[in-house]
Amino acid sequence: MSSPSKRREMDMMKLMMSDYKVETINDGMQEFFVEFHGPNDSPYQGGLWKIRVELPDAYPYKSPSIGFVNKIYHPNVDEMSGSVCLDVINQTWSPMFDLVNVFEVFLPQLLLYPNPTDPLNGEAAALMMRDRTAYEQRVKEYCERYARPEDAGAAPEESSDEELSEDGYASSDDSVAGEADP
Image (cartoon, rainbow, N blue to C red; front, side, top):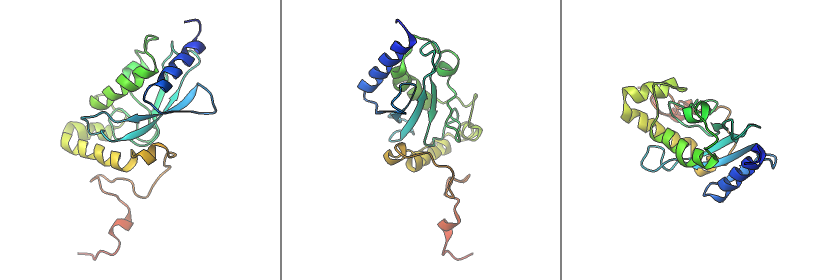
């Protein structure tokens, strides 16, 4: 490779020619969005996320910055910022890897094999360790609520009255309007 910028261009072209929808920001190759589908045979199946990717000037020698734009319930993804805790992206990145590896190998493995012992989302990690069935149900609820095709194209939500509460139901007072008190 003659330069990091040539490698960046090559990796971007390879990603764009793959099955991923890529949307550049300001027509540059440093920042862009990629539509990412949840892996089959996982509670994330059927979900569609918009992933923000930022390539540092030193890419491929320095890893890309990866973050989920729409919400996802996962022990290794910060629910508010979308930041991802993944060794291969954060500490053990190698120039041998490319952008297609991130979307075809690293992110699917992150979703298929969460690591609750190194969490960014402590609540998800605790629920996963305590009650795997309840954890998977919460994942599916988040997928239905935040990872629909229209959500991947939408701007991230600032905040909503209808956040999921501890029991997984919408906590908005509107959801119980009109019901009589017991």
